Image 1 (cartoon, rainbow, N blue to C red):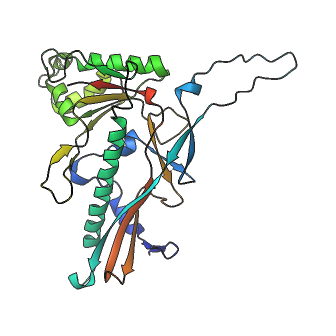
Image 2 (image 1 turned 90 degrees about the horizontal axis):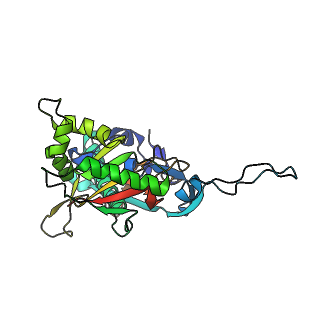
Image 3 (image 1 turned 60 degrees about the horizontal axis):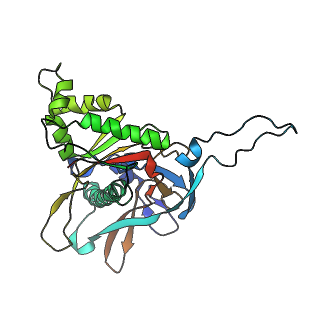
Length: 315
């Protein structure tokens, strides 16, 4: 049965359940992996998180002659965040239908959720690949040999050097490499990487995807293959990748949205207004003379500590 929320719309958990795990466009969207959601009780405020400033503090822990112990004032730093109520609707007009069937409802939900997911993916990738954030030798390296130069490029060595930069400047070990599908293709044909896989007679893309994280010493290889229409609404379609082919990020990403663990990005989610990642609702509109379907969420994307990542320019 539908759940009612203060008369603002009928929540549709059966449709939300049907959308769980849905990935549009036959691609994997990575926003919730790169910037895990963490629940917050306000739409904006300060989130207490781990940063390099406090994580590695060492202080005198000897008990004082007066019997007191040293007080550690702070382990977590406050980082400002803002969430945004985001959503989209689609109306099935009364004059356009004779009945409402679940499959038609599901198609509508997929259209709405797919667009919201693509929008969020672009926001997260724009943030993690922001060249204005990652500047200077501690945060950014222009590799010696572009990855397109397959005979002599060395992606593994480039990533290992970037990992060292992160460790030296933050004390954490990166656990992920984030790249575009094109840069993964360059890894496929890299002479040096194929040399590492000499024991495999004919290395496939799956072999490289499986072995590359081990070679680079990370847990996750995130290959972003999503695209979007970059043209303004109403103009001819211009297909563009969601992530730049010029850069690769070597980063410490969070697990489970725990703010007390190091993470380059988190996504505060205002759970009082959006208890699920995507809330599905429907309501009757007399003005539109139809049944309106709405998918919404209340979330923000925040860079927690830029020193938990190092950007490589690979072109």
